[in-house]
Amino acid sequence: MFKKNLCMHLGCKKLALSQIDDDGNITDEPGYCIEHLENPSESVNKIRNYLLTHDKIINLNIESLSISGVDLSNKFFCGCSIQNCTFANMHASNLRLRMSVFNFCTFTDSTFLQSNFQFCSFAGAKFINTLFTGSDLLNNNFNGTTAYQCSFDDSDLYNSQFIKAILMNTSMKNCNLKKTIFYDSLREAVSFKLSNTREALFDRIKNSKVPLHDESEDEAEA
Figure 1 (cartoon, helix red, strand yellow):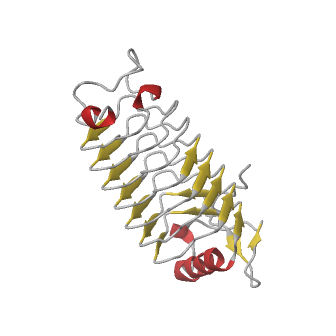
Figure 2 (tube, helix red, strand yellow):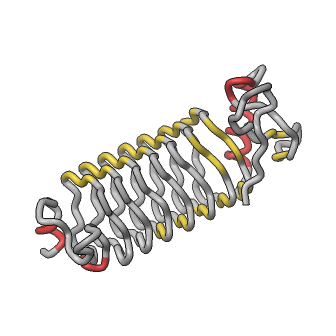
């Protein structure tokens, strides 16, 4: 699924950034990771421009980049490996993601309104002041993520996993939580009002009920 090239620097085991040719297209040429590029700013600018000018982004590999202020609305990503990156002030309404990896990325002050993510991984990622309202987030891995002041309201989270996630001041109102897994998660001031919490899995032993210590239980049954 993923086209991955290791960094050409001797002894480096990191993945090389995708190479963008003079025509603005991804190539299969070997390259270097961000640490070993001769001109990293040039490569970052090429990747940023590629994101902005292409509606379909396939097999893009980037790692440890910081990108801010981009608009990815209505774009389609598939088979991409985007890890340990930092995104700020990103607008991405109606974004479609398929079989892509965003592990250990950080998203701050960003929006994914009415988006559609399927079979993607956000393991260990951080979401701060980020909105997913009205989205279809199906079969995704949010294990170990941190979500602070985020909204998943009116979203479909079918069969997604939030195992060992930290959810704080975050809203999941009116969501489909069927088969959504929250095992060993830390939840503080999380609202599940109008969501079908009885079809979610919160406890490995008693899967059908939100634990009594969870402050959101009263709202879930209101």
